[in-house]
Image (cartoon, rainbow, N blue to C red):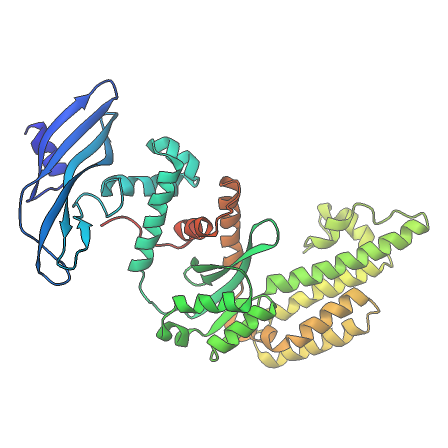
Length: 405
């Protein structure tokens, strides 16, 4: 087997394409595989009417390296003129249209980017520019979205993600059971959330049983209009966030009051009140144990916050409803304004909180994906362009089938 037959087999070429010659350019450390196209009859793929060859264009594609030599495919590609006057370049079998990388090279780049996690590092390893790798990722995501099946999804998560300075946000729709991002849109208004549902087929929308989210009204209204049969489940982690914020407000107010009396007891204790202390008998809880047993407003607020955790352990709606009613009544009598504000907010969303009991879903998967997305942002040193942001999220978190055929 000579070098022409070798590359003919490697590239999987068949008529009218064949390897004409292989030349080595030592100065540039390149191997150039010259491919030629034999004359044949071309037709319009839409009508089948014979097309005329308008011109021949010389093109080059980057292929996988051969023995540490950069390998290029070079060919004169016919440009056809159709009966309506349109012209179009013939698609070559070793590369996709508009790509200057072979399919095998694109597959290799995709696998390297997935392994590296950073575009810049992957570009250096494969010997391409960052813009070229970005192009590979865009084509990979488009390919993956085209192949994605409209499989049923019972549980979805909707969450926001900051994409830059100036309160710029994106809204993510996540498949909770599949642990993947389904779609991303810019903004967090109701009309932005409404755009997400267009990525689901009518059958998929009908099969959704519940959507986990925070208490943002725009998301709530969007789900109720687009998925009237689905329950809204307010995420337990966002509830914990609101309760933690209430505890911290109580701590700050009490800290100021104590400082006026010359007492810095609460100085530097912020994170002691925010962290979980499942067992106060353990050695690491010594400092907190001393604070907790003092007659402090912060200590009372912390107990209310911790006691609400029992709500999530109920399996029946009746007992869960009674627990919430008792907890709310006690919180309203607590004489802690910050806690009372959160309690009233939770009461206004009681129905969505109770929906957790039958469905038992949360945005924990979404928060895990958010960690990956945050790493993507950090590695990219910020992503001011939303389309690049969306591409990278779907590339790393979409679980798409992205390799060229």
